[in-house]
Image (tube, rainbow, N blue to C red; front, top):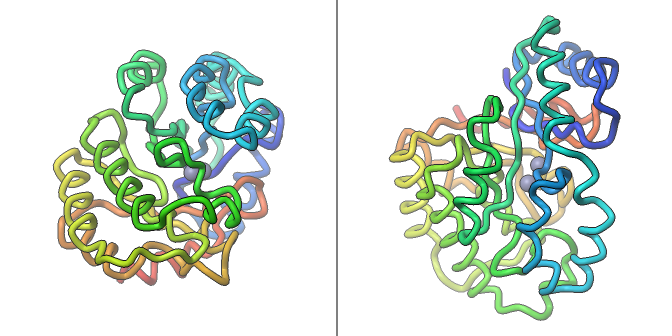
Length: 258
Ligand SMILES: [Zn+2]
Ligand SMILES: [Zn+2]
């Protein structure tokens, strides 16, 4: 069993901190964990967020509390140290990178070839709208338009050829909003693009853990069927932000893939 999306962010970069994730992973019977960080933690990525900070005062405040507190070299040093003295579990190290179409070449210049095991692309903003922060922020938007643009942006992410995988591919559903039209054509196009680019898709428990009343566990059934039909590799992930959530619902996620 694999947990392919675990955030290190709430602790110091030290062997002791990483060992707490490893201990929990071993206790859950995992054989592989993928550790990552949000790219905005690193000073190098801060310029990518100018437009979303301008879009909303809420995001501007949130961003400046969390962003740019480290340099990529801090993380790369930790990765180097852990690789020198491996733990008794396979660990991959990556970055979760917010996708903005106008920053594709910026991301390549900043993250490619730096020694990461994987680059994970995420849609966290739809034309500037940070859809996954608070349900009340949705009261000002057109649900159909947000859904269309979420999937169009996801397809652009896949076609960019930058990423190894796509994170939480239908996280737009988290607060229970539904479009008035069928999403099937978008599911087809997204799965087709991922397959063509040799990218994986996440089967995640993160959204369900946050919003159990409005989001089901993992991908919506029709999207999952579509991914499988296009032979897109699917990785089970917790999106843990602390050691105790490592491995959360991984067996249940795996069962849904059968
Ligand atoms: Zn994410
Ligand atoms: Zn994440």
